[in-house]
Length: 175
Length: 313
Image 1 (cartoon, chains in turn purple, cyan):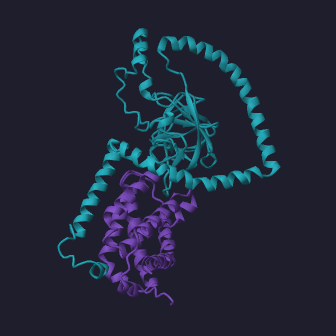
Image 2: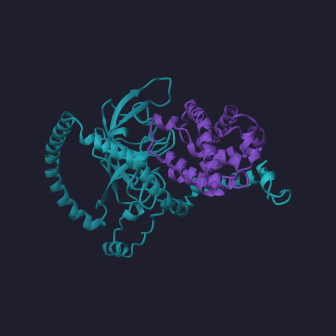
Image 3: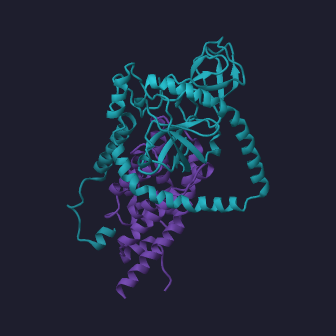
């Protein structure tokens, strides 16, 4: 049976993702962010951790929320040797936006969702940029808005991959 | 939707409202940032998280480094030959200086006995692991940390000159802020004229500023700029760079002076961390007291400067 990746269909089937899948996907995204990026690569690097975080905020709202976003932000701050709380703040704000629009966003199809996710990613960049200005780091310019676009394009493949995993995990458990 | 389908109706056990949570976490993040930025108060938290994160980061950096190493291994003969030639030439240059240094060192030993072991330099070689992952940040991560005796405030140099200063130290890695980072300042001296000033980072990797100098300051393009050692943090005589341009436009109150840093940012692979901090400095006149201070590791009176702050005399 071909899988229906329309989110409404998944909602109705009411499948829950396993803890292992959530943890593993977040970890993989963190490793992606931890690759030794620098220069232009760093500017255009999509923030995979935030993207996966937003995915789980939309699909597992009872388990993944602002608390996890805050913790992951702190980890990113240590990893990127930023000031403690910079990423934490921007992630929490982005996740808040995602939670506020969650029901609406999930009604759309994937490519339409990507546009909403782009807005959340922009919000995160803007908060991070403002914080950077306040703590006196040099402003990287409008180039910083490229990375969210790249990340938003990756929203569809990401959903496809993770839905697939969720459904497969279910089947293995119950059949 | 999920919640409704999977759980019993959760009208009452939802916890605080999203807005309340946003406020809570937002404030917490701001408090953390202030604590980190102004008071350096969350270093232990950073070290704790760092202990877990550093191995992952090292592992993630490994494949890229290994690939570079392999490519270098099979690298062209010409590059290696040129590099070898370059190194030989430099060794020859240094040989003369090394011989002169021997005499100076003997002289210095006599002096240091009088001033407490002020100029003893112990340094830790370190390798650059990767750049800090933040656009617009001028930080490098090196593979030495607290366990190797690297502490915030220490100065980092390489074979061409000053690279920067350690600003955060984790258990096995630390972050070094480049001298060219915005608002990073170094007390300098113009080698030719002996004029003292303060060089300030611009945020541009290829330039340092020399602000607030009088219009008639004794400067020429090409002047060698070295550290003056006045702040007690940067040792005197380390090469900062050369004056690249001087713009004495009458329209400005001060001339615009730009320094081209001696050590280029892209080329750092091996660096040296100078293991000394200002509290090890400040010699006392009384020799036995200085000895006692050294033994007890006590901080001599008057050394109230926070070693972790960047040099801003």
